[in-house]
Length: 247
Image 1 (cartoon, rainbow, N blue to C red):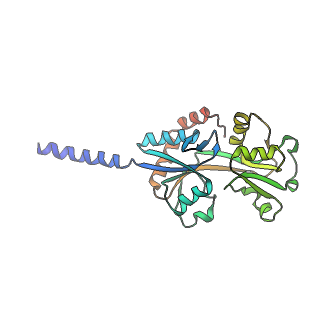
Image 2: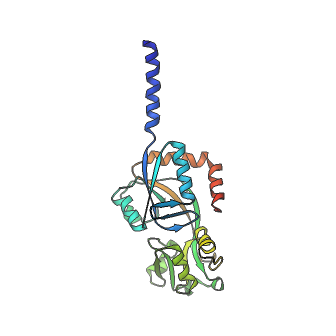
Image 3: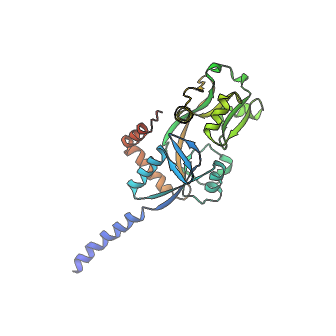
């Protein structure tokens, strides 16, 4: 009996360590309709990001609860008040001033999107000097156009929702709309029922942005997520196909 107890104890100890790796975490997410990537409203969170994060959590034994909130408040809760375990999406370039001094761990990109100016088809090909106004989502930073914005050559109007920003472009209230093409095309086709109303002008400045999972308190879970994205790349590809996401 004595020798049996000695053998069982290490096994129970190892099991306890394994269970300790799992946790209940709060993920701060954007209260925006940015389908097919994500949609957060009324306390609900859906889309590719939800499916991906849920699949990761299930694989590791974690429990994720999602907390949608406006972008400005989300950055404040995450980086200043530190009331959230994770933030998605995130990128080291976003709101760098707010996050200054916070030791944030970022995952590899869970999805890569192209962000640029969407214009009326008839206006595609115009030079940047003809653009006087653009729209984007409140809290977003149109990085490729910051020089023109700082010099006041271009003014920025912020919309509360992506479909509202798109409508500003289709109505001619602004010269272009800065959004990612994956979500913009989905919203125009599936929500507004106006596919192709705006098109990406790929001759104008654009950028590839990585949407990452970030954390201040749990860098070890970010490492787990990176390993998941690599090992489960086939699953990730299937989720992207399910949500009709082409990078």
